[in-house]
Length: 107
Image 1 (tube, rainbow, N blue to C red):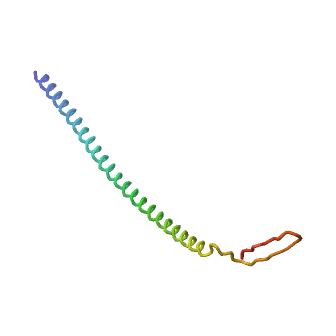
Image 2 (image 1 turned 90 degrees about the horizontal axis):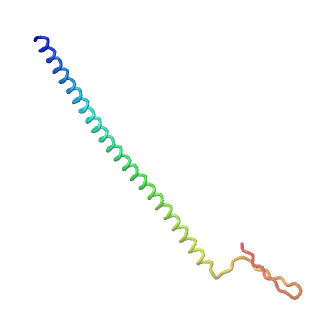
């Protein structure tokens, strides 16, 4: 009877220990998943901030290039409007036989 009681007590202790170990494993897994979720959220936030900064830099560079192109175009258009209708350079008229050649040399 004593052996039987001790055996059942040992079996009950073993069952409680198994249950406790499984609970500890579940809690550890939950903590691991929570830590992984927090890490993922932080990493995602960092990636978002980096993407926003890179986009801001790209936009700023594009606007600088766009502004430079507009300045170059406006200067080129002003230059073209100033020289339109005028032929600059020197003129030479050459007559040979019955034809007349006119050369306009731009300097």
